[in-house]
Amino acid sequence: MTKLKAVIIGCGIGGATTAVALTGSGMDVELYEQAPELFEVGAGVGLWANALRALETVGMLEKVLSLSAGPVGTGVRRPDGQWLLRLPRDVMESRWGGGFISVHRAELHGLLVSELDPASVHLGAHCTGFEQENGRVQVRFDNGNEIEADVLIGADGVRSVVRAGLSSPARLRYRGYTNWRGVTPPRSVPLVTEGMDTWGRGGHFGLQPTSGDRILWYADATLTREARMVTTSASNCSKCSETGTTRSPP
Ligand SMILES: Cc1cc2nc3c(=O)[nH]c(=O)nc-3n(C[C@H](O)[C@H](O)[C@H](O)COP(=O)(O)OP(=O)(O)OC[C@H]3O[C@@H](n4cnc5c(N)ncnc54)[C@H](O)[C@@H]3O)c2cc1C
Image (tube, rainbow, N blue to C red):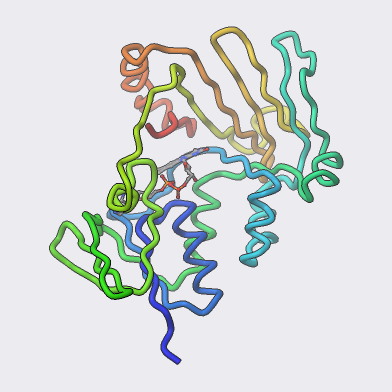
């Protein structure tokens, strides 16, 4: 029997996970990513019970857990340290069938991509649009290439070309705050055994334990769009990249 051919646009966490899932279910999968290479970028990503259950379904749970410090509890605190909300690990597991884990985005991404056949991952391929006809889809790229498939999956992020071709482009709105993320070097700071978010006036700071005796951290500040542009250029400094600090992508 001929295998169904699926084309996935975008090799982020969503595209790579979908490729693992569909390959495992017997489809012929080709993944197209606009970036010329998949380099290590990003900082901490938190995965909740629903994500862990999805990873279990596609056979990736144990490997992803090994990137973390294991499931932990988490919660929200006031600036004086008092808990506003606390979700211990056992409560999360009994309610939702899983705890909360933190992983380095680049490590999670690298793990997912390592599960794929390298020949099925096409880099430097920017999708510009598609047409559907007679149960097939024709996908176009900016270098003039066109490919045909049974299924097209848009995993091309917030400015998705695939979504725009199906309905309308996503309307992006600046929500009034900006975010920085980082990872501490191994054994460089006292470790925490659970995640925590501290909410203050005009600011927010979070810590999450991860593998390798490291802590993933993030900080938000309430900033106007104009102030954000100034901090963006400041956070692109060489010192930030040395300490593994990234500002969340727009
Ligand atoms: C570089 C990067 C770093 C990030 N770092 C963090 C982090 O540290 N912490 C955190 O919590 N979240 C981070 N995020 C966001 C988080 O990973 C995603 O929001 C979340 O995982 C959803 O993933 P996604 O696969 O749907 O989209 P994304 O992760 O945004 O991936 C979309 C992919 O599609 C590609 N793409 C876009 N348009 C096209 C096109 N037309 N043709 C071909 N390819 C296209 C993009 O290059 C990208 O690789 C990061 C995202 C990116 C892209």
